[in-house]
Length: 405
Figure 1 (cartoon, rainbow, N blue to C red):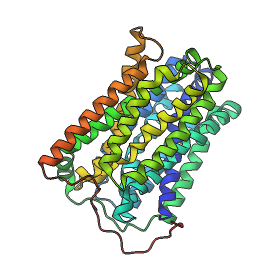
Figure 2 (figure 1 turned 90 degrees about the horizontal axis):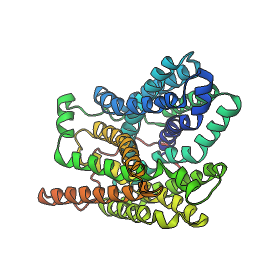
Figure 3 (figure 1 turned 180 degrees about the horizontal axis):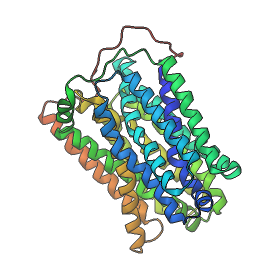
């Protein structure tokens, strides 16, 4: 696999760290800025809003630019947002800085996925995307816990300075390892890109992402009260257990990439079905400590097995504008985060018990399977292929540095 994928993974690591670390630093930020914890929680929402707005907007505005230049520019914006976050003197400027930090998130993953697939042979496209996403899953295992500890010991501003340094390292890696602008992006203009994004198969693929990852976040958003209130773990043990989720997510991401290169649609259906089963069994698995720990790891594994297939499915259905569609899929991930948490909260507020968000998540996984089935039916009527990703761009002729395969 090309070393350029390492540069993309470094950027993904930094983005994943800054996205999730704020949740662990909310008390520190609230105390330092003299605001309530709920008000500090709006900083998480500001980042997510930046992702949803920035993903399709920046991808569309930069669609005709050389992609390496786009990736570097996005990381520059990322570094600036985190540096301003570290220096923000008050809550309002920090809110703006977190929004700016979120703007490049979706476009980076979207454009990065297109670059990753352009660097490898067609039969390794899903694996290349999974290796880029590896930075995101490893951030949950290593980046977020270390950054949280740094913020607690040295102050939350130190965390965002460290994330800015990761961003600078990513910029250097992109300039050194990604081939020099061999691919000049889509050339059909903004109208052509929006037309490609507006097709029914693309929207069905995006709908599968929203439902499938909504299933994950319906349960994961409330996994801490499940672990403490049902499984009986001490609050101090939750961080370690969430690390198991990250380990499962990393394994699932790598497994999904490998399997999707053999059968894109088969891996997608298998992952969604596995996710639904794990969530349906959550109420039973949460009643003993060892089975609850296994359930958390399996949740991450099942959910992230679908990550690469979903990303590639959207790119396949919008082959005339893969950067825009791929970035829109990242916005769909964040909508899934918000929508899944909201639906899980409704189940909890209705008094159905601490494990009820997982049951709601199982229902969302079933919805995702249904949407994916409709998409499959539409493809068959339109004469679509069997589910392997077609080559959207010719493989570049220039040699790039590679790691041992």
